[in-house]
Image 1 (tube, helix red, strand yellow):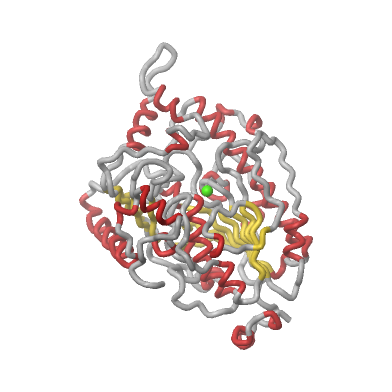
Image 2 (tube, protein in one colour):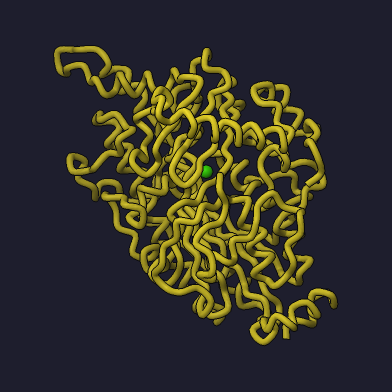
Length: 475
Ligand SMILES: [Ca+2]
């Protein structure tokens, strides 16, 4: 029944696969904004409850090792929606733009007969590459909103509009992006919060951490509302639901970094009848793999038009592994002065190369004139003894760690998820370092990434206007 909306070649291709009886599945993407994966109970987060996310996971597959290339909104979403790594898609900085003519999920799935919509935060450019149907419903609450409302009627209408045409819908929420205005942080007993290992323990940090956690609980409530709308649309049984937390939170060491809690993301996939319920996988995946996976799940052939590769066999339980490495990047302009980073991780090791280690790291939303939160100064203030307080030695250590970084860092991810112990000086790990460094260099060369020279205001401004450095080769 869906075949009438598909190009003939695609319809003919689908039929022998035995999928045409059900038709290609719908795709519902649920994406948060700046939620550190392991603040979710699903990944061990001790402070909040997220019953809707946990319930979704109990019906699907949870990825223990999912990543995104750049720990900032615009570039990670561009990677997600294009299946291309940042340098090749063009969005290598925050608030930048994909290369002119870049194809996105809108093009790839429209070609297969889908209607492709987005509700909420878009934050990808240029418009020509991301012509989503705009679906109302998801609101950015900039003022304090203890109990937000969420009208899902347009989302339900989009999903149930025409059961003969499959859909892709991104529901892109604003929680938990700073400033943290939504939810009820007063419900948390600040003294009982378990702070992550990479945060300095100051009263202000605890206050702000509670406001951030309250936003995650609102996101969980919104996830439940979207899933209710999916049920009401009558499409749940034929819809792949993919939930992801996006990149890490706006606390030092997460967003704007290549540390694990910046680039690691939550990923849960539910597909009734196709994915076994309640499983977890260690397969290594990253956002560039998502679009090729959707194209494959729609029954179409995936060629070499993507950097990522379909992990459909992992979803079907036919493969335990996917990729050997995930590839990571940071360019600090326009979030602060240049601080270029390139990094790579495999199933156990995470290697970071700071390309300008002589520079101080500085980020304007946490430490500068564009502050949306006010804990950083307490980390500094408690770095010296006063009448009231002793030196907060951990705050001193974390300020140093954050602002002054060595040329190379090597971490054991499974033993040290907050990456507090740099093992680069361990001679027994020299071969691990060499292997990861070589693979990282090969990736940069294959992409045409020039490295440190990319992280300048001029390069960023040119990219915003469609004048990118050429990629090494066409994808
Ligand atoms: Ca974000």
